[in-house]
Length: 124
Image (cartoon, rainbow, N blue to C red; front, side, top):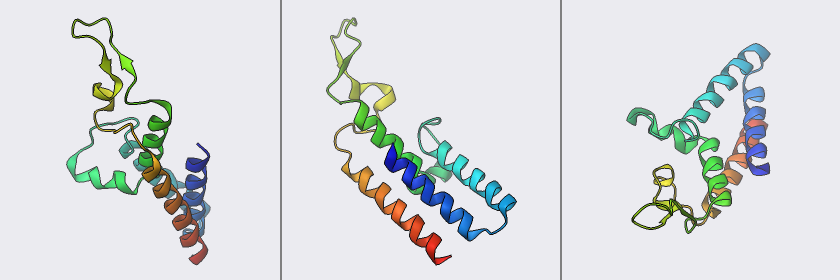
């Protein structure tokens, strides 16, 4: 959670440095962060095709995936009362798009985004 907070703080610093008007920077930051939140996979799992590229620039996407990987394991079982026996959590419809193993890739992407946002804010 700390890494996500540091990354979002860097994004806020970039918006504040790039747009000098307080009203405009608040409005634009709210719009961009809402777009990141909606395309990050937390609220909406299946976004339209023309917007799918936005999730790869969203720190919410990588942060949410990292939180899922920290909290859950692909080997955890659920639905043990069904006739077919127990199923793993990875095979559930909620986790079909997320590989619950690993997590280092998300950490590196969030670190790169945090440093990139802060560097761009410094250049502004």
